[in-house]
Length: 138
Image (cartoon, rainbow, N blue to C red; front, side):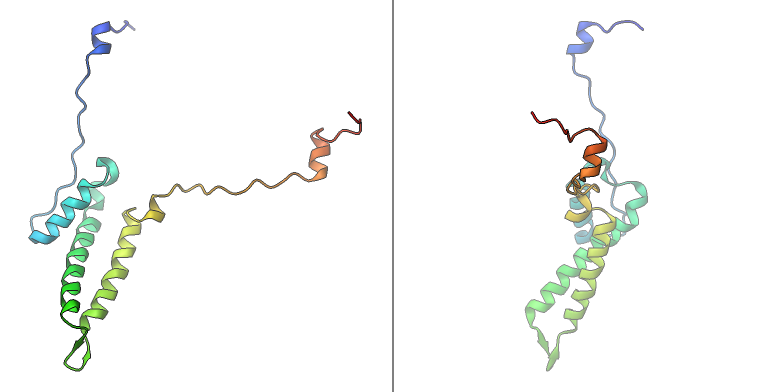
């Protein structure tokens, strides 16, 4: 294998950027904005083409949650009853939480999957077997 020249080591090579997922054409303006923000604020390799339906659903849920919030801010009581937007908002939040876990967007799912557990102390028998306990005084 030939050696690399000094020029090839010093000269930076352009790094090809990966192609990010694009929002489908059928999304509304608000859903599209949420989709783009979600994809752009994560690493390029965070999402695969198979994640597209989940990303679309997530961006739609966010847009619907914003609409539900607007309706709730108009008034919690509607025609003498509790606004139906409250139950809509509740279901949307549950869906959003479930999708965020699947898309690895929540803090719990981003955490490493190797929890640190305290090391179990050795028993006296294990210490004897390993030669850690000496009968000779120092």
